[in-house]
Amino acid sequence: MQYVLRVVYKGDLLLFTYLNKRAQCKFMDKLMPCCTFLGGATFTVGVSLLLMLAGWGKVVGTAAVQGAVSLAVSFAASAALKKMLGRPRPHLVVPGARLKDTLWKDYSFPSGHTAASFSLAASYAAFFPQLIGPLALYAILVGASRVYLGQHYPTDVLAGAVLGTAIGIAAQILAR
View 1: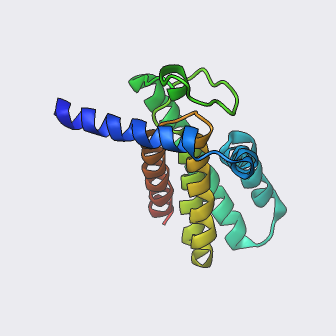
View 2: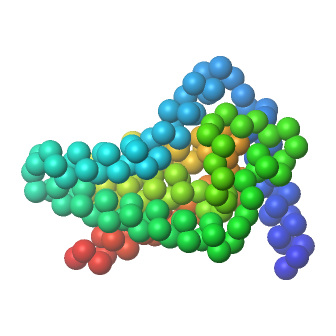
């Protein structure tokens, strides 16, 4: 088992190093902070509240409520897992890691931004299947931005994606 964990960590470190250090360009330096913002609490909670309050119809209102529920659960679950597992952020461990974002003080695993964006994407995709492509792209870009900006390892993002998607799907199942 130790061997498998070492191999996974090496792959994680290689992919982090590539995305964080080598795949840099001015366009991505401007795009990735915007993508990260789209997965943060301000944007995700704000969009959920706006859609609930806007009264754009029963389907949008219902989708917004279920999205907000899955979002709240994803925030709580990722925060609990971070405290329980205590994985330090890569910019604190990897020599020369580029940090192009706020210096977060909590732990790294799983990515809360990614969990939030995937929980919303899964929730809204259930109501609006025609939007699954743009919703998936949104969530993937949020996750990629977290590695690019030096906040998370790729496995943190993968775990956040799985967690958020599972919570979004569970919210749909439980609401039926």
